[in-house]
Image 1 (cartoon, chains in turn blue, cyan):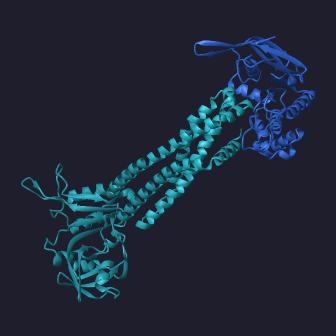
Image 2 (tube, rainbow over the protein chains, first blue to last red):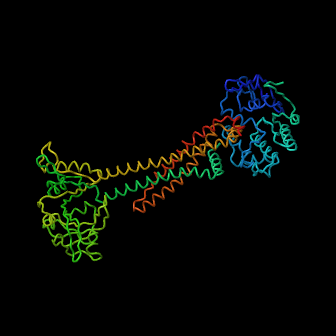
Image 3 (tube, each protein chain N blue to C red):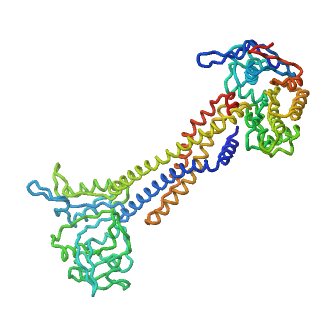
Length: 226
Length: 407
């Protein structure tokens, strides 16, 4: 199993009050799946994504990523897991402003040098980023800043960034939320393409049009899977 | 992330906010420039004082007669005539650490040559005086031991006296009248410049001590105002001092327990005292200047806090793609250090040139030493680290989820 969640609970403490966001979620996702997690706002789907993306730690329960225990690891170890195993795609793109598409795509490469001895030279990094942009049809946009790109193009840059370290998992949080229908379809086609190449895609959305691209649907409500 | 890349990212972030970065740097520039200028000017002044003191002669010991006392009332130093020219000879012969000795008899008065006159000091010395004072003749010759023995009325004049009385004419072989006594000029000294405290060393006439004593001073023939001793090196000054003390005590037949009837002062002591004063002043001014550096540092901290807040989303994103706390900390720390470092470089340039201008204007040696430059630069980098650490640490502790959602 790629991802195994076992009775994951997440409770937020706001002053004296405890707010449960996730209440015993158990879930397994296999390599190569295309999963959509659906739910209304406040259902806990963002919390679930944060936990799967190891941006957040569960209050209780067990999380195995590639059969290895994740819970209880240090901040630094989690940062390395995010770098190597997970590519994030956000609703608001989150590209660095006034920075070229190329450099945005290169960014994750800067944070994985020297760990497995696979550090690349500056030139190799640039080459790799250019290839990734080419695969997403953005060769002619490599030196454009995000403000000079359309929404769809910006999201494709973000996908290139997510894929640059060849992670097994892409985690996309409402990736089409800020895009028009045409761009949305393009982006979903890109995900579909990469899924066919073996990358596991976990999509978080509340739109059923988008969710239908996935081959497995998971519904969440009030912190529990349905 | 490699250090080189971190540096590149930091530079780019600073260039993105040019005006803000320059204004922040200005605080450091002013602080470092003030410190550099104050220290350089202070050190330059100290060296100048030291040079002036050493222009009096190398490793000089000055021996003065003791104070006279009458019925419990002590008079000032030099009021008794306990030193003799024979003391000078004894010191020269008996003390190993002495290079040269000259007795000194002081007088002063009006000097006349034809229609010109000038008031100056007259020092009666022995032929070894030139060696003691490390002085040379520009023209003519110095008097010899036989001229001292004969109390000949010959003299050697300083550059200032030569200029006042003879202007461009050669003074050698001319006869001047000192207090109406005719003295023949046999030589002219080279210009030595002003000593510490500003007196003109060239405004003087040098004559055999015996002649000065006999013709220009009413004192007894066999006493002198002062002995000038030159030690063999700076290291032997203390040894020479001890030896001279025991030689003079023996010659003056002072029994154990009585005070010395003379006192010994060395130029090293004077130099030390003046240098200490100048150093204290420099330190004090440098501390005041450092306060502006401190204010500059606070400016850096302020702007870094603003920068961290502005770039919260960027920090969140970097964390999401794998930046460790250390990477974020380093990124902002390097940014603060670059600010402070560039400020430091400009501060050094501005402070150094200010010191140079001040030094040139005052005819001081310029002393922007490599050492003080390196220290100033390291200090500005340290200011960057110190004041940049807190904002950088705050950035590194951000929660990536909250940072990503920050509006």
